Length: 61
Image (tube, rainbow, N blue to C red; front, side, top):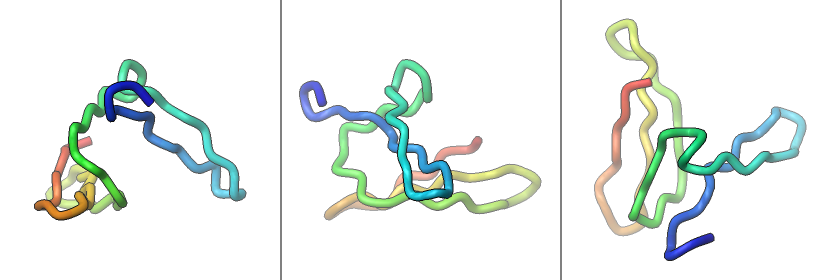
């Protein structure tokens, strides 16, 4: 991690994870992100990130 910023850990569905850095994923958070879920809405996939002690962050995929 660098200055509190870290990678997105992408799971392969078999218990292993790959680090995907913001330069590759396009996701950059300055919050303490704890969870993420993908939610279909209005023909788009939304990514909803749970933030520790904060409001959720929602991004359209």
